[in-house]
Image 1 (tube, rainbow, N blue to C red):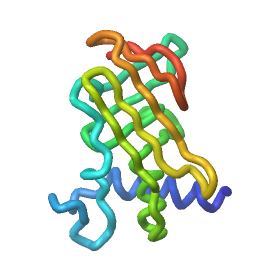
Image 2: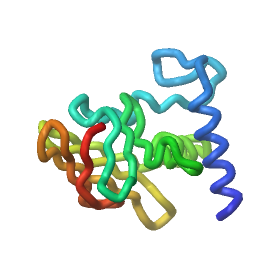
Image 3: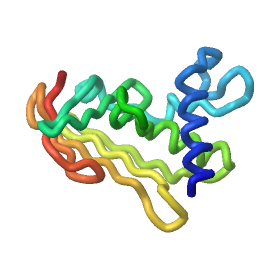
Image 4: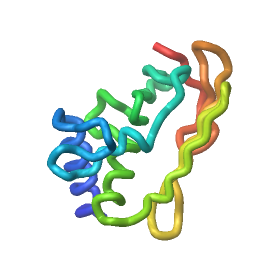
Length: 137
């Protein structure tokens, strides 16, 4: 478990520091670039906080929990782990005008699920993995 965590964190760091990505979904050095795989809708992109101080950041190609903390979680990084292992992350992403759902393989027998519902332009509700009401910064 610890070995997988170290590999995952290394991947997140490598991808967050990489600038050699082409536009076709593969990086110049042959590594995976999953920008085309995760596409949070425009209305949810930005930084969101709950009353307890938990932060979620949505970019054009990632969902990051606790982005400024000591141990940020990147959905893109976790999905990259499976791609690099030549495994199917079983990624399913759906979105409407008011919802955004993302799920992918967490282990051989379970999936990580995120579900967000737009309450207003400045509030969303998370009803799956990180439950709560979040306000846009």
